[in-house]
Image (cartoon, rainbow, N blue to C red; front, top):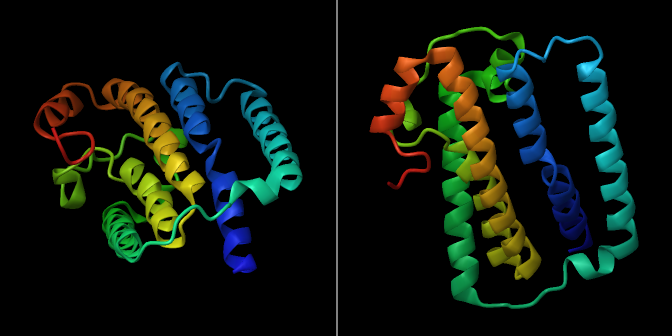
Length: 191
């Protein structure tokens, strides 16, 4: 169980700043600041400082992070169902986007590739921003860690904010085509 707990803590630590990094990158790309001298260096230094602080805090308080708060078979089954759903979203988005687009290379290179509206993107504009909270919600329910469930809600809220900034950049890049897509397809599967 110690290995699982260590993995969960590291996974959570990795994800804490991700929404804010996404927001920063989309703002920089939209405002055409991504290629300004030293901006990438400053962003990288900021990210390293954030991860250093997170690492220190986790080292200091790890014994409080994953306190098992419940153990219920129905919640474990629900957790497994949610994890399967997260895995399916991951597989469908990777199949449509490919690995390069998953990691945002088109935004960073300012390439105007085709707007993807097929596959899972027929049903949601931001399926990955729902997938990530599902991983933590499912793991929290499966293992009985209440903090992971709270973290899933943090991720959903922060990734919803990231989706807003991403959409501003997508509107700049795709214009009317993206606005039409936005009218037809909900952000997270449900209108």
